[in-house]
Structures are given as C-alpha cells and as structure tokens.
Image 1 (cartoon, helix red, strand yellow):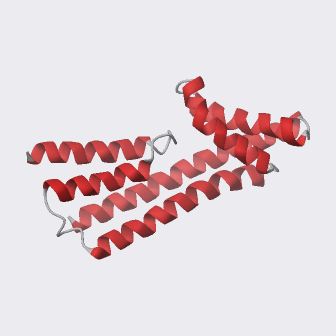
Image 2: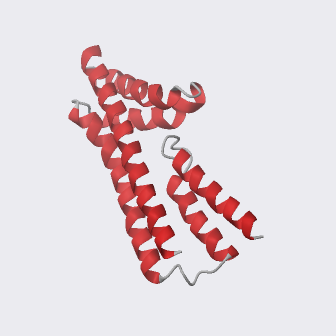
Length: 159
C-alpha cells in the first residue's frame, strides 16, 4: 500500500509540473492533492500548521506571479488590455486547436488578433504585443517551475 501511495503522490507532482505549460491543468491544485494523498496514506502529523502556512503563501505567490508575468509581457511590449485578454484566451484554447505548438502559438495569435480587432493600431504593434505575450508566458512558466520546486523541497523537508 505504501508503494501505491508514493506512486499517486509522485504522479500528482508530475502533473503539477506539466500544468506549468498547459494552463488547463491547475498545477498548484495537483501539488496540494499530492500533500493530501501523503496525509491520507501516511500521516498528517508531519504536515504541521507551519507547513500549510508556507504552502499557502507559495500558492498565493504562484497565482500572483502567473497573472503578473503575462500582463507584464504584453504591456512591456506596448500591448493593451485587449492584448492581455487575447493572450489569455489563446493560452487556454491554443493547445486544443494546435496540439503541442498551440501552447506557444495560441497566446501569440490571441494577443495579435485582439490588438488588431480592438485597438486597430496596426500589424506591427499587434505583432510586438504578441511577442510580449510569448515572453510573458515563458517567464511565467519558469517562475511557476521555480515556485513549484520550492514547494516540493519544503514538502520533502517536512516529511
């Protein structure tokens, strides 16, 4: 039974990391599910209130960093709110429309199309905004990987 527990826990952590690139998968939720599975299979005694407080702070940081990185990328390259929304929509639907490559193409095209349709600034500015969206997504993914790794290390320290 112990082996099954660890397989489920590790699978949850792997899915959490996959979720950094596929936003449809809530990465932080799978990380927390891994902790809960540990508690159910083994014991919650190692997972003290301090552990949960630290994890809660990282969850808040993760959500904040994720939203800020994408918006910052678009705005830094001259995009508008329309570009941010288009990028977000492209990020969600891109992988379904264009498997594998859609995770990069979706946010770019979403920002470009939103800028063209809403602001009508021109193709050059729209492409610049799309590029900013791509930079924001990649930055966000790196930050999420770092935060998830710190969360995992904290879990290992407490266990």
